[in-house]
Amino acid sequence: MRRISIFGATGSIGESTFDLICRAGGPAAFHTVALTGGHNVTRLAEVALILRAEIAVTAHEENLPALREALAGSGVQAAAGTQAIAEAADRPADWVMSGIVGAAGLVPGMRALAHGASLALANKESLVTAGELLLSTARVHGATILPVDSEHSAIFQALVGEDLTALDRIILTASGGALRDWPIERLAHATVSEALAHPNWAMGARITIDSASMFNKALEIIETREFFGVRPDQIEVIIHPESIIHSMVGFTDGAVMAHLGMPDMRHPIGYALNWPQRQPLPVARLDLAALGKLTFRAPDETRYPALRLAREVMAVRGLAGAAFNAAKEIALDQFIAGRLGFMQMAGLVEATLDRLSAETRLGNAAQSLEDVLAMDHLARMRATELAQDITT
Ligand code: NAD
Ligand code: MG
Image (cartoon, rainbow, N blue to C red):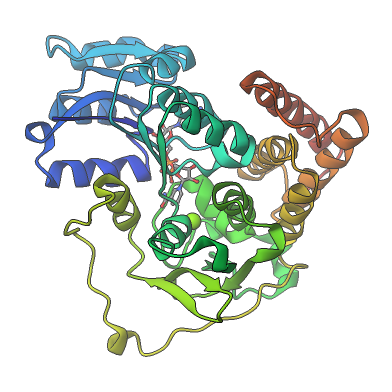
């Protein structure tokens, strides 16, 4: 029986993964090793009981009594804290979903790879903060990273059986997020609830706001560079409001392979779960006649400064990705808390990168996970300090 773990089991990606596991037979088909979550202890326990997990772990120590109580007498172990999540990743598993949001997903993902697991990577922040380390850990331990981000799964699928030396460019599609049709002057006043109204995808709150600001696409450009090993100038972004083409790959002979489908994360998750085979998935069939047309437009970099910042981060490389992601996480926290305007998020990230490049060697390659975590910590401190100078 395949042994699986789901990190971030209570989130949007985690729930979609749970749905697919249940449809494929649940505990009769999979041995569930570890499930992790945050504050939603009731849901974490429910899923752990249904899948008969070995252990359920909440990120927060204060939730341990409630988790213990919910699992009492079931035989499912309960644990809490960041360290316990990392240790859960040391338990041998064949397939691990990396579905935690933010840099918190990095350590468990690395540890799962160090034990040789196939890592279904939704947590793009891992590749942005520590791309080279993650890939080398997988290489050394004979582990596989399977992309789950819809764009990267699309590219991965479009490249199957292809001559990689003939790869010319990668075209990432972007929905444009909730505010894509707003006049640019209004963006400064966008509220959290307005940024959360995504037209096509139901996702966690943080990635939904990042879609509206295109910080999500900025992370994905860097993710593409790291995972597929292409040069930054080979990566293009196009706004495609319908989210039917999940991304495209262009070859030197001019051919462009596109991956199409309805926007449903159960497709890329299911592809990673069944890889290298394909299995039927509960995703609605694409009906092109009903859709009628697919549209495209070029992204405007004054509207989306995050895209320019991603290019600058790729030019520096080294620890710049870790600094960029951490500053972005703080900027997003500040926006959600109402302390920073929507367009001020990019300003804060840029100011943080400027400050860090003056005081450290951002371009130095990370020698270890500790280097990455130290940069993540420093960038969060600097971004928090700099946020105090900016008033909404
Ligand atoms: P979400 O907010 O719905 O869920 C996040 C999960 O992580 C929850 O289980 C939460 O409890 C847990 N978590 C949050 N902070 C944590 C911490 N500090 N330590 C441990 N656990 C923590 O997020 P999501 O939308 O499911 O996204 C998860 C990841 O997948 C993100 O990296 C996101 O960018 C990526 N992703 C999501 C989608 C999507 O459709 N939701 C698509 C592509 C990529
Ligand atoms: Mg994506």
